[in-house]
Image 1 (spheres, rainbow, N blue to C red):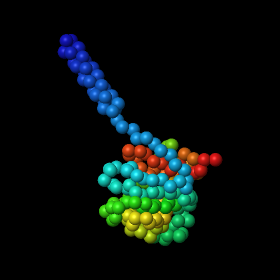
Image 2: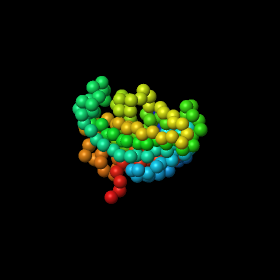
Image 3: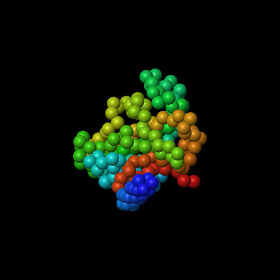
Image 4: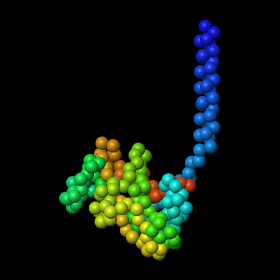
Length: 193
């Protein structure tokens, strides 16, 4: 009986220590400040990044010019070589303009378009690589622009209607995430009315 009581006390003590340690670690967790922008705003990336400050996107800016939803069938009709590996019924197209205002790193740093996130209350989605390459006629999702130049791209996101309600994509809650740390910058893809 004493062994059972001792085992019970030991388990409760270890559990209490674990919960306390987890609480202490999480209380010091840094939550980035979120900055919101709207369609057609020029968003300065500054020192912000997705995964690592070594991304060196500072000096770049992004502007969302417009959005469009097209059926995958229509896209395949226009681009016969598209395989639709993600089995999406729709593509959410975000037309953007990147500008290198004063990034002096040249080809050694720039924008990794594969990091950009389409987000809503109930999902996140990343740029669809194959469709991006077909639409923009470019082989890579990593770009670097010369200083004081700009370029437009279309960022396609596949939409599977089993998971994402296409009718809700046009509301103000759909956002393009352009950085995560130290500030999370999001562009709302519909103008506030």
